[in-house]
Image (tube, rainbow over all chains, first blue to last red; front, side, top):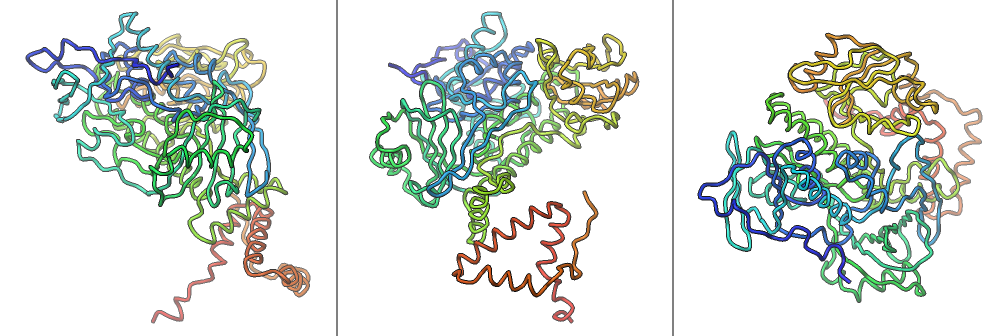
Amino acid sequence: MSKIFEIPMYPYARHADQDSAAPVRHRVVVVGAGPIGLAAGIELAQEGVEVVILDENDKVSFGSRAICFAKRPLEILDRLGCGQPMIDKGVLWNKGKVFFDDRQVYDFDLLPEAGHQRPAFINLQQYYLEAYLVDRVRELQDQGAPIEIRGRNKVSAIGTHPDHVTLEIDTPEGAYNLEADWLIACDGAGSPTRRMLGLDFVGRIFEDNFLIADVVMEADFPTERWFWFDPPFNRGQSALLHKQPDGVWRIDLQLGWDIDKEREKRPENVIPRLKAMLGDEVEFELEWVSIYTFQCRRMEDFRHGRVLFAGDAAHQVSPFGARGANSGLQDTDNLCWKLKLVIDGKAPESLLDSYNLERVQGAEENILNSSRSTDFITPKSEMSRLLRDAVLDLSEHYAFARPLVNSGRLSQPCTYDGSPLNSADALTDGPERTRPGSACPDAPLGDDFLLPKLGNQFILLTIDADAPDEITEAGLTVKRLALSVKDDKTGALQDRYLGKAPSGVYLIRPDQHVAARRPSYDDNQFRAALRRAVGKE
Amino acid sequence: MSDTKLILEPNINCADDFYADLLAAHEGRDKADSEAFNARLILLLANHIGDTAVLQQALAAAALPSAKGTKDV
């Protein structure tokens, strides 16, 4: 039986552009049809921006790769029309166990906050996400949206100019040239675009190797995240067991830095390791094995004129905490609405510098968190190992030590504190979590939820406050969503958006981050806030 | 952020008793075991204090005041 990742989903097909005498100019070219490139293409196409996605391959990603999707990316995928299939197929989990040496030291339940449409996390193989995104591209094409994916189109040269980018592309039928007003590079950690432009990729380097195996087994392990520190079957290293759909289990075994990758990948070396971990009696089949080498680093700037970098092409983190695909989806969510406004002439090009600023902030947070996890999992000195082991030993007996155990802090959206797009917080009694720069938390509204109502355009959210039904400023029309705390009997809307304040008015960006908030509507202030949020103030 | 200050004046009721208990706790342990014990003790006490401002002052105080005054001329 063919696996989903063995079937060409966007096979090479000759395009008229290849026979054009002069290079054809496109509005946006996205390099890379991984989850981030596809998400960028879909978001732009949904907004009517013409986009071509190029990929050197023609299939979804091989093997499970990114498997843990957090709430915020799921909410973003909802806006891209791909959230529901993710939820339907994904494995929901909240529980986990931590092992140290030969014993379980504790177990936990994440007890996610109630009143959100989407769960805290799901596990799902990356190839499913990519397949759903490709399905969505096809659906958009059927509706006449200006989007295409060109498989086996490998970018071999890039030229940058003040107002466009030139591309040389290799195909099975030879090379051709294209031009793009804008280029979004989503071509992964090894980004050829980054290399061709001779750009930096620096930072603190942590180097480690992980053997990643997808194992198909009929085992009665519960749907939990199991993490081992220094287990007998992988001495001095860590191990992770996590469930995916289709009876596939993901196993990560840390191998350390100085290893022979090709040797470690051979089944005769992998299988004894897995047997030691799972027990001799467990029957399993290896679906995919890979050695993953990670480094924590980022580009200095995610924007280089008309070239914008997103996802792993722009930043790389350790796998602890699921911050790769999850943060990449937040990159394009931040970028695409800004690019749309710039293309439409409704915002200055400098708005794109706020993409760099905000997402560098996000990347820094992710690098900080994942570096701390790495330091805990792989102690760098005798003393750090002593302290780490002390935390684990204590955690078996006392709850206080458990928050110190760090096998990955799961991805939370970045709050863009200090962003030039934010207006000063004027809702003085308002909750911290919805201050300007925050990603809007969901809240129940009867049988419905808040986030789907916010949509993907600027919106004025009023809670027990008056305001015009729409305002037009700087060429943008912003509609109002009028709510009352009475719309949510659970009290979550009040807790999350008002706190002690009796009323509130929020200006919310297309990526559902808060731009401004005040206790009541003030025409001048909100018009200024809107101008500021599009880089005009 | 609290403005609690790390106590650097005598604060243990029976200082000699505590010191004897501390030594006794290490008796019969080899170096590695003693070091692990100390690490656990630090973590327990740090959690009891809880206040990160105080913990930061303790981290700084444990590094001892710089010897600058005596060395640099």
